[in-house]
Image 1 (cartoon, rainbow, N blue to C red):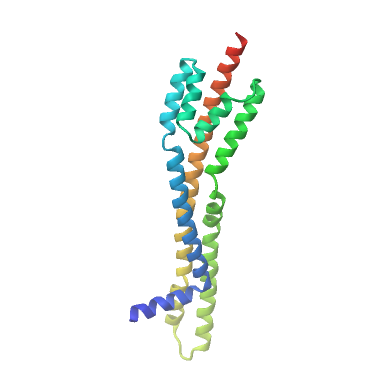
Image 2 (cartoon, one colour):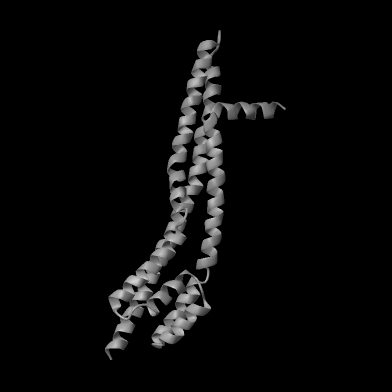
Length: 208
């Protein structure tokens, strides 16, 4: 019972900011889980797809490359298909490919700005809660008769829980944001290399 009362006192010392941080933590973890599942589903077979596509390109077999896109749907297949079935001109094909790549990148990065915002603001929210707790501790000290420094020490230690909570929320959000952003950038780079090679081969074929 004493432990429960102490925990309740600590939460109270953290103030309403702990409630905000708790909500941000739940939302952040749910978003991380959803993004992880989406990236695993859509990019899980990317290395195998790229390897198969390169074999078809080395054989200069664009029909086989298009058939591969139809049998292996996903972000990469959508971008490559837009490059293969686009307009006849190289510039027009390039623009169509860029639009398709932009759509897929937007889908991969959906929700990531929220993770970045949570990661950058959660420590400040926690610090704000700590400041409020320290102010409350000194106010209690001023109103208590014959109170020693121990009263302030206890109040400050309880108030610091808000800062710890802010870091607890921010660190996973920042790590996940950097991880998913890196995967998205890597996908974009690989797709640009592949589509540029396809455009060059198509241009060479039309010039023959």
